[in-house]
Image 1: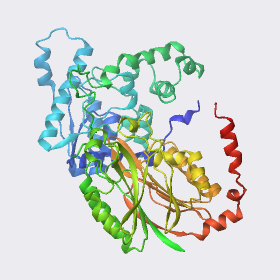
Image 2 (image 1 turned 180 degrees about the vertical axis):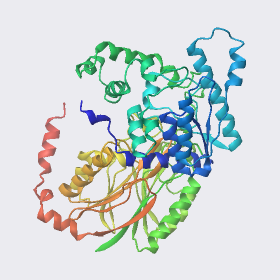
Image 3 (image 1 turned 135 degrees about the horizontal axis):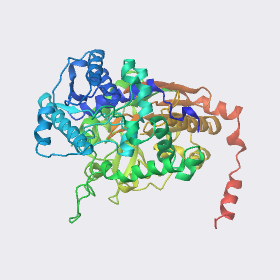
Amino acid sequence: MTADTLALNNALVYDYLQRFVQEELHTNGFTEACVALSGGLDSAVVLKLAVDALGSDHVHAMFLPYSASSDESRRDARTVFEFCGIPWQELDISGMADAYLALQPGMDRLRTGNLLARLRMAVIFDQSKKEDALVVGTSNKSELLVGYSTWYGDMACAIMPLGDLYKTQVRSLAHHVGLPRQVIAKPPSADLWAGQTDEGEIGVSYETLDRILYLLVDQRCSSAEVAAEGFELDLVRRVEHKILASQFKRVSPPVAKLSQRTVGIDFLYPRDWRK
Amino acid sequence: MTYTVALAQVNPACGDLEANVKMHVSQAEDALEAGASLIVFPELSLTGYALKDQTLDIMRPVDCPEFARLRELSRHIAICAGFVEQGDDGIPYNSAFFMDAGEVRHVHRKMYLPTHGMFEELRFLGRGKQLSVFDTRFGRTGIVICRDLFHPLEVSTMAALGVELLLAPSAMPARGFGGEKLAIEQTVGLALGSASTFLGMFVVYVNRVGFDDGLGFYGGSALSDPIGGITVLAPRFEAVQVLGAVDVAHVARHRYQLPIRREEDLAIVRHALDTRRDS
């Protein structure tokens, strides 16, 4: 596999994604977008995209820190707000989170992380109601495929413009739109505890992960064929397992079919259904 | 004879027949004003593409009252547009009509309905079973809808039946963003080049723009001339109407210079097909 297999024509992609954001909002009767900003790369690209697509007056972004969030995240979030020309908005979710955490002593990191992601979801969806806006999601293809995201947490949104771009492709797009270097260069992190990084948790670099995913998913290779491209078979199998284990997050919950026409099975209308 | 063709690279509203008819009327009036004799719209231009169960509600016979205004307009400009046809058999088809002089001159039913990956056409629509070859004031004309264009046997057969003007209404989703051009643009370029270069046809390829449920249609409508190559190329992603000139003399001149059609011996093909019937 050549190194540039994942390379994209960023100008073409960015043009296309702006139009996607515009049309998905406008055909559904919206002019406003809400974005939850973390200080990380994906939400920074989404915010820039939304601003370029809709105009800064139509984008409502909010930084939603918890008391354990790093100062670096706040600093980078501020930089991104300034870069996009959006007024700073911050809502600290510590009070909401701690009220529940106090009732559930001994919660582990995973449960806590999921709780924080779902509280942020609750806040940004409420904000979207206030602003008559749609929530623009920040998930990328790498995390969607390995399930490194919280179901009904950070995955919850109205549209997902980066959902078909691997993390390394999002990074390349970030360079293209000129995001501040500090945001692009820092190690991706869910920022749930000090020193946490995605790559530490998933156990592989995004460069490697994305190439394995590309071969497994886009090229439909078997794990043996991927290994033959120079990846450790154990690692490839672990990635494959992550894809399988997270399938439930990528589909709507199954409905038990009883009638002639069942929502989710044979009541089939496009999302952009206009009558 | 030289005439002007309008390529209406539009973004239909999914499931809104009334709004789309209005848009067609306005596009046809613009084309008429610009001096066009023929206007070609994309696949399913009157209905939108990702209809799913809206198919049942939106299908119409071609002589339905909703299209009366377009039939009327066709007294002044020939119109090729896409719709969900309710056949006499009650089946919905992915069709394109050709109206001229106030009449429906032809209806083509898409023959090859992609049903794989992102496509699910056969889940909702019936399959057309006939090549569309018919005579118009523009010469012998054929219609292929989107995937039909990728079937060289059919396009070659249409050439063998004398088609000089191939209308190719399409709804091709963008994919393959790695290069200067989209991967799908290169594929379409091959089909257009092959029809014009080897079969000596004009091809009017009209692809839609806009998004239906995450599928983004890329536009890039083109007029492919047997002598001039791609003489008109509409931009990617933009809703736009572009005009092209068709000099019908180019067909005979090209076929004289590169006499592939003259060389063609259909008896060879017929014999091969007859003797390989078992395969």
